[in-house]
Structure formats: C-alpha cells, structure tokens
Image (cartoon, rainbow, N blue to C red; front, top):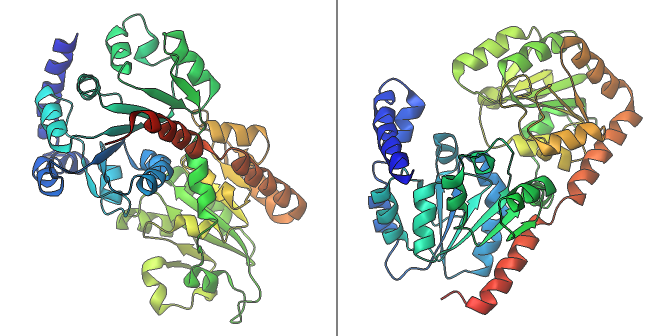
Length: 425
C-alpha cells in the first residue's frame, strides 16, 4: 500500500505542475515550494533546536496560534518552524511574528521527507486539527520524534475507520498523544485501538478570548459609525464578515431598503477589484471603500466596504449585530467565534453542520441560521428593533466562548509534564 501511495504522490506532483500553468493558485502552490530546502538550510543550522508546527491553511494556523505562542514562551531557546500546505494559508501568514521560519510543506514523497527532516531535525512536532501525511509520520516515528495532534477532529467517514484504512491507521501510531476537540472524536479514535487521547477542546476559543485583551480600536471605524463629529453618538452597526456573492446578494437587498440610522460594514471574503465592483453595484446606497477612506468623510456614508485584509476581528468589536458569510456555500460558514467573543448576536446561512461551534450556538439560540431572503430580513429586523433580544443572544455567544476556553493550557500541562521526565535537550 505504501508503494502505491508513493507512486500516486509522484504522479500528483507532476499533475500539479501542469495545472500551475493554467491556475494561479496552483502556480503559487508549485512556485512556493521551489526554494523551500534552500530557505531551510539558510535559516536552520545543525546545532539549532527546532519545534515544528504544521497547518493545512489559515484556519488551522489560527487554531494552533495559542499553542505556538505558549510553546515559544516556554522554550525560548528553540526555533519555531511553521509549515503550510495551502497557498491560502502561507500567502497570508508567511510574515507572521511567531515563527522563526515559515515555509510551504514539501510534498509527501520519501526523498522530500528525509531531506526535510535531515535539515530541520525537530525535537517536537505539532500537527494542527488534521493533515495526516504517511511518509512524514512514518519517518518521524523512525526518528523517535515526539509528535502531537492538537485540536484534532475525527469523523466516521475518514479512511481510518473504514475496512480499507489499515495503511492510514498505521500512520496514526506516530502520535505520542491526540488532543481532540470533542467526545465523539475520542470515541472514534479509541474504537481503533488508541488510548493516548485527551478531550482538550478547541484552541480557537483561547485564540478569540485573547483578542479581548488587546487594543481593538480603529479610528476610521469610529469615524464611520459616529452620527456626529464628537463621536458621542454611534449608529446601530451591522458588520458583515467574510461574505460571498450569495450572502451579498441577499444582504444588498436588505441594505437597500434599510433605515438611514443603521450603518453597514462589509468585509468580503474575496477582495479582488472585480468582486468589489460587483458588490458595490448591488447596493443603491452610498458606499465608501477602505482604499478611499483618506479622501472621504466616512460619517457621511451608510455602507463601508473593507477592500483589505487583516482587520475584520477588530471591526467586529464595533458591531451591534454580525452576519458571518459562507453559509450559503460549501464547505460552509466562516469563523463565528470572533464576533461571538465580543458578545454579539450572529446570523449565518444554512450550511453550518460541519462546524461544532456554529451548531452549538444555533442550538443555544445565540446564533440564527437563515435559509432565504425572508428569513434574513426577519432576523435582522428582530435584532435591530428588539434590544432585549439582541442583548440576550449576544450574552449567550459571549458566555459560550468563555466556557469553552482552556484547551491550550490542557495541552501545555501535558507537554510540560512529559518533558519533565524526558527533558528536551
């Protein structure tokens, strides 16, 4: 089976190179890996102590960040190596402040794996949520490197739990410990013979609660939401985060008919010029872009479109109501924990069942899931015109986040206790 896997991996590597000619994302995927080994050799010396974190993409990076930050504090004499599989993670966080070295993960071929591990010689490895690469895992096992899965999620449909999944089950033997998000994941991994598992919860809760401790103010947002030059009176503000075209179509219909004393901030998932232009054309009210803000009186506009990245979390702190996009497409809704931590009621689309936090908040009524224009309109009107309802749902969201934090500490306690016995060199 391993022989077949290696043949398929080599074939895929060639197919991806061909696809890169026609697909910009694939081009980043291929070109970004060309200099990985030379970068690693220039930044990691044979005597360096290295701790390696691997994230599939941006969401996994955010998930692992609290653990990375704590590991960096506890092991200050070690270099943090961060790898990404996807361009959507690497291109956004390649200049992150936490890792000493950030690169793409070389494809999972036997030669790549051996060369990568020879150069990086990690003492500890953390895989975040998922991404189980057999050659990497098998080689880590051979080299007796401490390897952990954090914020893990297991589902019945995965190959590990199928009759043909022996090859993949073997790869799981690499892990010293599994830190999973929920009981169902623990039960699944135990059903195939693994007892080295702890339900630690989701480290994203620690990530978002830490947001409250920083300065989230943005002067230009304060200008926009103000109803007068003194900033003493703030408009009721709806923040629309990570929206996709289907979200925007429905929301534009609502915005066009809304009251003048309500302001909207839209941070689309796609900020390409053509997509921003399409969004702007849907809205009949006056709109201003982030890229235009220096030359405009922001308080004069009812709709502010954020055509940049990296500030949505801070913008949520100004929201009275949040709409989080993605729920009308696949795989589904984007991160709802960021607005939830600010105690804001949330509205999402119907596709959220793959996200445990969204499911829990819909069930507890802190979050409202809508299926169509009518339900979206009714839900927004309810939250706009019923302050008690708005405050109650916001309180549910805030409490939910606070009650679920602590995963990072659980993981760190285990790691530190283990290292007291095996002392990291």
